[in-house]
Image (cartoon, helix red, strand yellow):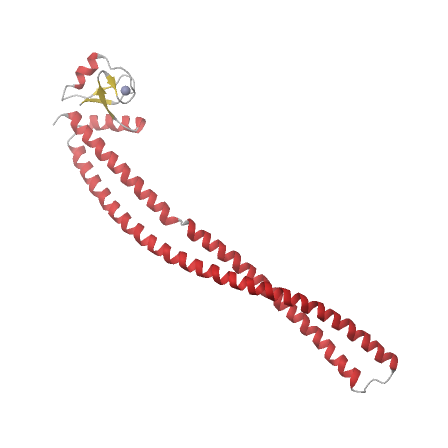
Length: 232
Ligand SMILES: [Zn+2]
């Protein structure tokens, strides 16, 4: 086999290696982050925060109502148990009771409104929780499939790298260095001669270079883009 054929084969293997590495990197990215799961987590966190907020508001209002009850009950007792006989004092107690009951009624209205909001928030939180659980189950299946695919790609990559090592052994180190240098700079190291043009850069190849490309023992390079040329 000619040197240029060996280099072409090496390029094919390197393209395969690059493709496998890109596919593995893509899978690693998808394993690291799931947009639907992140969205479900954010939606649940938001619903949960609202639920907790309203629960705190409800408890605070309930405590305020209880505190007013604790003031109202003894005042009512004093009003009706006959312990206070002074009419002025009785009127004062009545006024105080009216004031406290009006306050309590206001708080109870707010409490009712909050309880309604809490009920809706509770339902929304449950729905978000169920959606999150479903997203987690889906993600588990996705991760299992991605990991299985990654393992296949990793073993294909290992096989390609082993083939590459064998291919490199067939080629003189100076030619390998040239190939790798051009590949690093140009992406593709080898270009076909089409008619009298380099297929890599579309510039015409001088006849002397074209003749050199037919020599199985040497490598010819495009004078313009420096790619290694082959005839085929
Ligand atoms: Zn060229």
